[in-house]
Image (tube, rainbow, N blue to C red; front, side):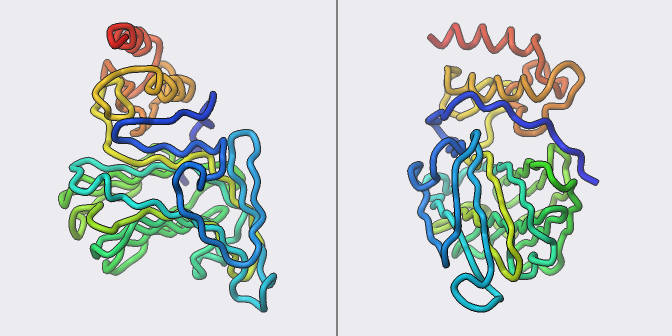
Length: 273
């Protein structure tokens, strides 16, 4: 069973510059540059920093198939990156019976390169698959709480999948990712059954250097980085593992983010003014 991480503290929408792109669910994704496509009549709304999708079957015709709400973002700006990540937090009420229909929630990183990573997420089970690689990885998750998913890619040498900071699987990729015309796509969909998904955020880009304080990999430490540092501090503390997404905030390399790390971050923030 994968452990559940503490919910992240979101203060406000932050436009992240540099080599990390972050969608924080304080606005609809298309306003942040995502391309939206729909099927039937998905119901959606924003509430308390979450993007909700309510998806019904049989609205536009008999099942299988029904509502779909999908967002796509090209990755052309990151071609050739030697350290790339995608991280997102989502919760679904959908049944695991929907997984064969690539529903109720999905995150796909793929394109025309022949390298792809596919996550299909239900209420209590996740299916992870790689394009052109036989076999599936099934991940049990606790229902009725959001979970944090993270994919890290190191050229053609290594990929790692984390759920709530716990390493689930690692292996050798078929090749580097992203390459030309590769995209990421997050989607809510109904196959036979109704469901509701809620997304907290989707982040992707160059993996920040460990202990740099520079979350957005733009070679400085400023107020944009403070937003994400504060998030890591709120989710961690002395002897509480902050997870792989917070390595940039762990200055003393002890796997947590606490007030000792905050003191170093403050000095770097002051020096960058």
